[in-house]
Length: 191
Image 1 (tube, rainbow, N blue to C red):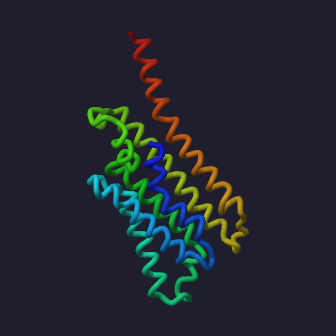
Image 2 (tube, one colour; image 1 turned 135 degrees about the vertical axis):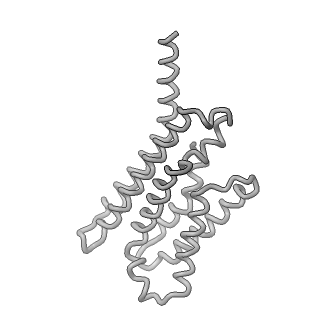
Image 3 (tube, rainbow, N blue to C red; image 1 turned 30 degrees about the vertical axis):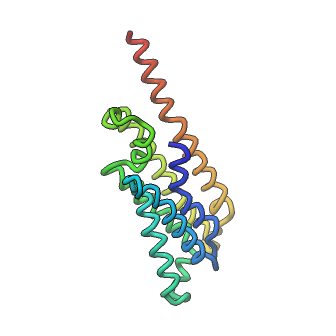
């Protein structure tokens, strides 16, 4: 799942890095532009993904809110922007488990179609999606706890979330190969 999955997170990463007490509107606008640019190749190939659609809708809504609503009515959004974005991702990713796990949309670009309905392919993608959803849920909780009135710190707002996301990327690279190796070892020992 490598680089193509990472591309899907680019708008969210832009938002997390740029958003702050007085910059979330710029972060939302930049993330929206990135989401729209990333949507073009998927649209041309007829493979629009859930994460791409959610990115355009979420950052579009934030951008419009920043443009039309009075700044004083959006102070809560300014304060909790990162926690809210992580919550949205957690809900979407975990919700995709009820239909098509979000990682499966990316995996289908790299795995031959004959394997898409295999139990191993389904299991791997359900597990990867679960891990990503839990990481986003933990990042959302950390984002709420990181607020100054809660005694927040850089550890809760940046260091732990970045470590969790890096771990999720490493797990995403490792787990499918681990499952494949285990299946091959089981097949060799059965023969």
